[in-house]
Image (cartoon, rainbow, N blue to C red; front, side, top):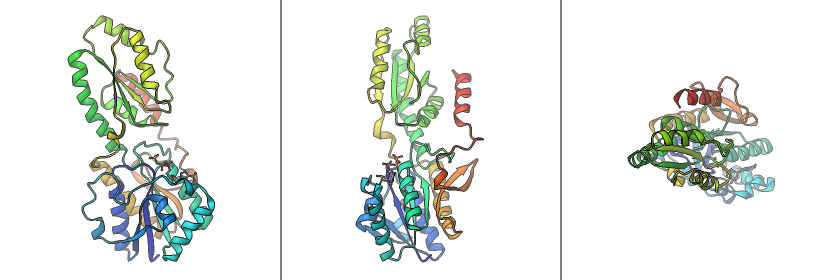
Length: 322
Ligand code: ATP
């Protein structure tokens, strides 16, 4: 290759900048010119594509968000628009693409690579950690630690006043943030998107609070599809005689400086993306499994590898710690 491009798409995630930096610097080290596409797939469609140098990625490894900007580009779901994007790239002499984003962005990358034949490598960049083929995604560790910071503070207040706090963390379809935060924050209950909340779910809490009147409690709720869920749970708890307080962490979890872990993960994935392109991969994602990077076909990113058993280990750990 003599020219490649990189873009960030979907929700921003801390560590995306570190990944962009690694793609640009590795490409330059390999004698390849690298271009930055602004605003995700929207920039591909509009031709908002600019040359990048080693200097243009200076001093960004520690910054949250994405210097390339991100976007949700509904048009990219149309085949004709994807061909338009392909033409924009080929007119500029760009021969391959690196896409950093979540599930949706990787679905777009897969279609683009299959239809046009242009080599594309995806990097899993999402705070949700909801790409089953990879043990980890860029931004997840930072989001967990950001949520934990807030939860540790909430616990101080909950303990001082013997209150029940319901804290909503991000994760529409995925309970990964909630489960890690629940364990690391020493929560009493974790409500995952798939958890069925029944009238007796918090019975144990009521029994314990009757025995120890000053007992505080922390309940972590994954945001899920139903925005009212946390309010419904609060309503149930009120009926059972508690005075729950609600705290919704929302977008505070998305930004911020990436943790060391996310910087290292993103740097490794960014560098490997370029190496994978040079090795001839062209419709793949850089995944991480048991600490090692691997090339996962974009067709298979939804297949969980059997040995990970992440959910099972969460359940058994949770039972031990409760
Ligand atoms: P996050 O995990 O933060 O939600 P994401 O990458 O999953 O990130 P989406 O909004 O689902 O975020 O997708 C980002 C963009 O990817 C979309 O705006 C669209 O441009 C493209 N995209 C998503 N799904 C598809 C698809 N099925 N076909 C083509 N392009 C898609």
